[in-house]
Length: 386
Ligand SMILES: Cc1ncc(COP(=O)(O)O)c(C=O)c1O
Image (tube, rainbow, N blue to C red):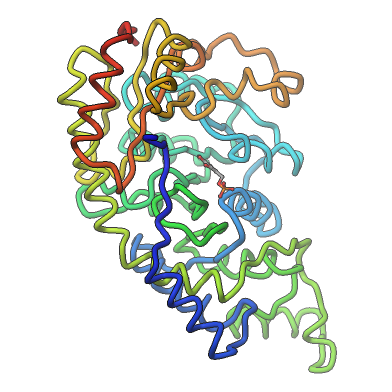
């Protein structure tokens, strides 16, 4: 079976976990989490990181921190229609006005023309971009628009850890970014996620909201300032809640895995990059995703076919997994369809919904596997010109 994803946790990782348990260390979020966060920040070129229990929780934490920290001029957010359920849901749950933006027909990120028209119409407080399957959005244009319309830029980088524009990593462009360490992602902590930011205030508030809204994980000056403002003495300090929080912590056991997994990230990204180009050269007659990256930490090979169900069934019969292109147009998903303002401008996303498919790419996939997948694919697939 050629699967869409593979397990990045190997025997060496299991041994490290067992050794960690044998030492009977403190298992809850503690020193190892701090170490993982520090190493992760260095890896993506951000000042601070906050380890949480999933990529979805990372998005939730971003959404709540923006509100509790008064980072927004208003509660309108533009979200990509080619994204993930929990790239959108936290904003709905917290009462934001959510507007979907169509996708670009090259990089599958935000469509710049549509984005500009939405900015003019709605004057959004924030925009969240999703770096789709290892690829970048048109960041040069989006950063220009950020200056013009003065919104906060956020990045859902759950599918693109390791990708770089020159030497700058995706996930280091906005006020905050989210990452996922779920099975099948570039690295795994079983379940897990991270929020990264270079903004000190954002980081401190996020670290409080991650755990109940108390100040225990905040930096000393922030903590002291709050204690002074609210006249909190030493006795009450541990049990005073300054923000409306969650409990979305992970543990030091998961962080132990994270520290080990991070050591492999560069190698994993390079293999995924080479696999992407191998697919591209094998599938010259088919659409290929394009963005300005020096390293494509590809998550899967996206393309378009006229006869998707037939392709899916034929490849399944040959033991090759395929799937929709992330999950099609989010605006067509039942939970969102019933809530959103009618939007007829999502033409590219509707094509993604109808004709998009993605093929396996992961660090255990060899060139001979890709030769096999593309040979079988070409036996049945009819190219769709996106
Ligand atoms: C773009 C995007 N955002 C968020 C998530 C959620 O991550 P998690 O599964 O860790 O909650 C995913 C999951 O694959 C994703 O693709």
